[in-house]
Image (cartoon, rainbow, N blue to C red; front, side, top):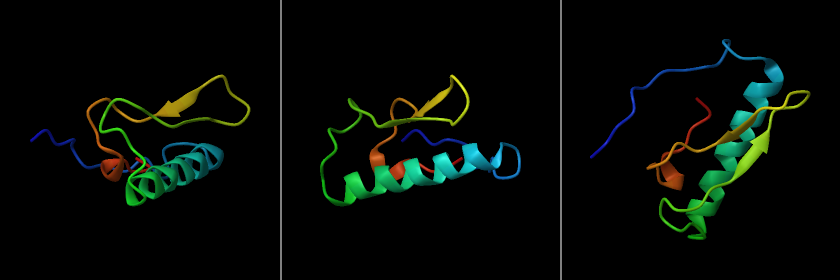
Length: 69
């Protein structure tokens, strides 16, 4: 099984980005809990406010494995 190294980005990204990360991770967990996911072949995404950057899950993670970091 593939495992990512555990680390935290809290305090290393802006407050806005951290909140988007937390909210997006919560959405992934809700989708997983309701079994709406399609294994690893779909995604949710969110734009970081006031930037052109967006967040999406790492390929290969199931929805219940996504975290804010």
